[in-house]
Amino acid sequence: MTRQISRRSLLRAAGATAGAVGAGIGTTTPAIAAAGAAGAAGVSFAHPGLLHTRADLDRMAAKVKAGAQPWTAGFARLAANPHAQSGWRPRPSAVVHRGAGTPQNYAALYKDIHAAYQNALRWHITGERAHADTAVAVLNAWSGTLTQVAGSADRFLAAGLYGYQFANAAELVRDHEDFEAERFRRMLLDVFHPLSESFLAHHNNAVVSNYWTNWDLCNMACVLAVGIHCDDRAKVERAVEYFKHGEGLGSIRNAIPVVHDDGLGEWLEAGRDQGHALLGVGLMGTICEMAWNQGIDLYGHDDSRFLKGAQYVAKWAMGEKVPFTANTRRKGAIDGWSGSETVTEAAPVNPEMTRPIWAMIANHYSGRRGLPASYLTRIAARSAPEGGGGNYGPDSGGYDQLGFGTLAFTRGRTTGAGSSGGSPSPSASGPSEAAGTGSGPRPQTGTPASPSPSAAGDDLAATGSNGLLGWTAATGVTALAGGLLLLRRRDRARREPQ
Image (cartoon, rainbow, N blue to C red; front, side, top):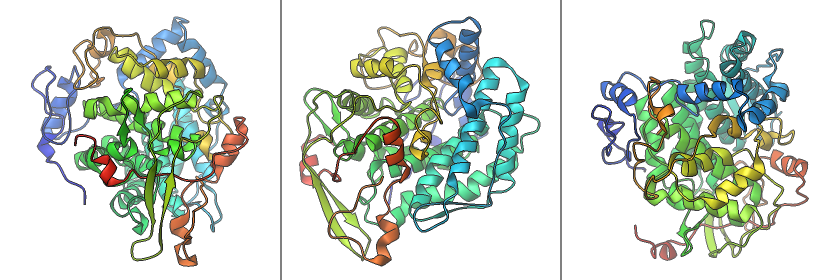
């Protein structure tokens, strides 16, 4: 059972001064008055306030209008994407299935979500009303139709990934007069959130280490995004507490179990394969960014542990050697089949393989905070300009991130922001982002190893998307590393200070 935190501990602020938040939440970011006051009153969170704040959207629009680079190149990728066209027509279903043994139809869902998000983003940048109307039409069609996400264990992946993405798309049009806002909130709360919360609480009745890091992370992202969009403080607290102290492999000390002497944080899934490791880093960055925009600093939590893990994955993904500690993880069903898997080295990588995840993370640490993050800045430059869903292969893996980070997250570097831990300095957001916005702070498929589950455990054994293989092939990867990975043994983990 995870520890809970009090409602009053979230987003506490005194005027416009940044300071420490109560016991379990973390530290506040600068320019916290708007979000802090709303949180203290229990009224609402800052909106728009998931991946993009009002200041972010205004910056994108201004830079593109001025023809500035690299924003213009990033916008060109958005404008050329087939999902970003105002002629997009949704294909909603009452029941969406994902996973083996069911008539899978989830591709229509994730493509429509990306169409809604991309059209909404394009509207904010250009002011072209047709794109707003298209985004709203897609979101209204699904909220008026969808009643269930079903399937094998992969239904939890669908709930997590598409729940957080849906919330982000809706956040961009929440004030549009034709948006069925309350009906959409009910869909998030009744269809997506219950599956994500169930997974975090029970892990599909599996032992807690059965499911890889990205399973926890996508469901944390859903709970957090739904909580913010729906102004539900308890859900936000739940996601933040799980990020810090959750028992599953997605909490930060389980996802990054070892910090090496060179300052790199070993990523749990680096011994599994490159695709899932990139997915996990992108999801953790998404969680950190959404929390930051509500004044909650997860980027800096635990001496900026995420920075160390992201640097590790960036270096490894570029084909450079990284340290690795042999690890074992338990798997299986509670009171059912059981087994374990051990990995002894980092998986092979293809340096050409990428996902649109790096600009957001690199620009936080090097831009907002002015911290050295050489591997992140290098890989972000190599990946630029980042695209979005539809630019990274035709299967579901190419739609796991909303993308367009070069456009959305590029900001000027801040110097002298201080150490890697703690809350940002007042200058860390940059004056143009903090002032006068009214939008709050800136603050899988692996084959199970022996012993295999019985037929009754087949649902439990499904631990990843079949679409990943198609996606990696589309990006030039001929094979993924064989074998699975690792939960760092508890006795080894005790070497680190707790």
